[in-house]
Image (tube, rainbow, N blue to C red; front, side, top):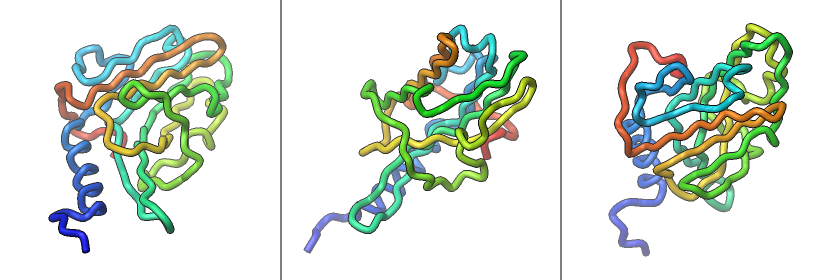
Amino acid sequence: MNNSVFSRRVFLKGSVVAVTALALSSCNSDSASSTSCSISGELLDLLDVEIAPPFFSATQGQFDNIVHTEFRLKLTNISNSDIMLEPNNFAMFLDGQRTELSNDRLSNSKFGYLLDQMPIKPGETVKGYLLTETSKSPDSYKIVITYNNKTAVIEWSVSSGSHTQNKPWYE
């Protein structure tokens, strides 16, 4: 018999609420004033990047809990050519540790899986999510997007300050 006050499921659900409450604003390549997120790199000459606060979620699997960090991205092609992103264009880091994109599609997002919406035509905007498997709610995130030898680096720290928006695109 387990004498714990909180079950693992209750703890994981509470973690989702806590992380979402800590990070309430999106980050984009135009908002240098955000203290919780930064986006930089030469890829921004081709692609405008916005990212929502990361979502930490847990799903009860058949044998174990499946825990994901979900990233919702809004990408606008500002180049004159199609942009085709694939899993190998993304390097994901949670608390400084490299992690791979998950093959799961277990999202509550109203947006589709980001890589199913490729290519991005010139002038087109796509919104979608990517998932990574994780064992806990991370304090820092880093996403490196590489395309045609150009990179964009997104760095996010949950413990940093944040600001609010009236109608965020990611809800």
